[in-house]
Length: 159
Image 1 (cartoon, one colour):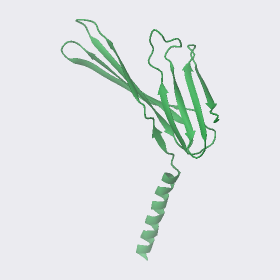
Image 2 (tube, one colour):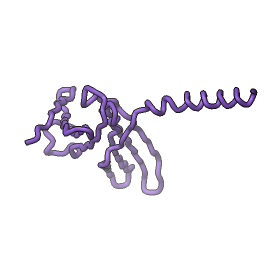
Image 3 (cartoon, helix red, strand yellow):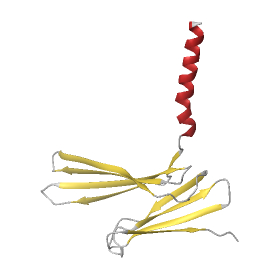
């Protein structure tokens, strides 16, 4: 009888442990990560190189996504590395589709700011598709240059 109780307890524990996994969201990492680096050079003085990279993590069930960025700044003189600093994190963004489903996606960003940059740091685009239907939505987010981002999504039509 003691073995039966242990077996039932183990089975109940196993079901409890697996239940959240069955309901767990599926996440997909974007396929086009990029890295950009800049360098500040001053002969005979300290040199600093800063690199940033980003990616997107997409919830394939809810169509919510996160924009993730990591940066590294390295300061050195002519003989040694003096300081290394890292920073980063992920920021949650809104859903692309209102209902849960089974989605696929991709994302890309504009190049870093340069002399041709009109709106400041630029923006990014997200493409999401319902893999169970002919349904595609494209979203573009750009910096307005006035402190807030402007984001719009459009459902694609098929002809």
